[in-house]
Image (tube, rainbow, N blue to C red):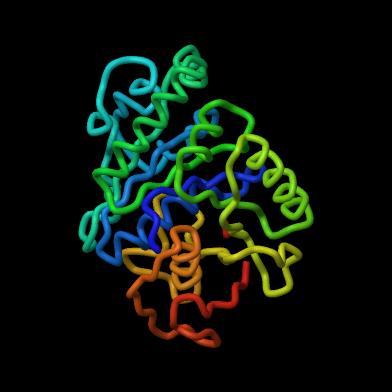
Length: 256
């Protein structure tokens, strides 16, 4: 059964959660779906880097002041010509407002934004930090699915176990684990999906999974999207070299 909302929780800093959120969103858009990504990682403001121009209001404004979800959404320019639609609701604001956006009251407002987005989009992704702040707790307890994102390393193995415990502590469950930077023999063998590195190394080149998908990277992202949302995509991939082109059969190499 396809789920419409999913929280991507970074098991550790630098896991590639923001990049993965954009890549998953672009892949779903390539399949003709309408997708929103909400930023809950206020400290890094990573999602804002995928947009140009003024971001006002941002998601923290919506959580602490007036404004509707529609006010904070921005279409991702790289996916404008695809079959679906990808819109981002990033965080970018002064420290004082970022701090207020982490309160319990703001977390309740975040839950409302997520519910509103679920009514407007086929899928909603939350770019969430490690579960140590109110907005991260709101994300994992209100989303239908929770996916832990971790680097495919020994550090990632330990971080996944720690994150599972924290998610359980707040009354939620981990539905999937996505490994990033995953080679064929990576130690995070319990991962439900693994995403390799990409030739795209700058924000300007992201997403690499669409509109001109990379041969080995895009199938892995598509499989991760299926795992995260418990969904089935109708995408096809050409010239996969040593790997099968069907979604879900990709054996990963390494995510930047």
